[in-house]
Length: 96
Image 1: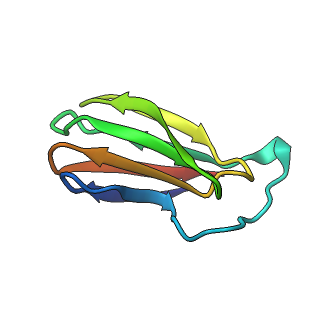
Image 2: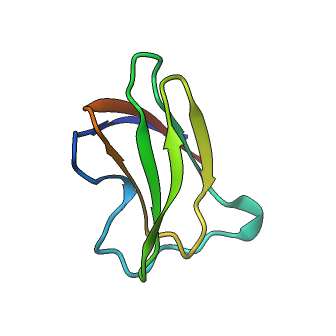
């Protein structure tokens, strides 16, 4: 398990896993896909979450204060990023 905090800045797209320039990622056995867990602290602000692959990105919705989400890291995923209207902290974990 890897734990870290990410800081999302108002009006910016901030990658919390991966990055815009990635073209290929390591392969993982389908029986052991890593999971990316994110949690917005109770005093945090709402963030919109996007999943990106090498061709495009899409919003999967918003998380607000006190909410969390777990995303499987599949081979086609090249990044997870957020945007927000106010600076906030995001607690992140990669579970494998």
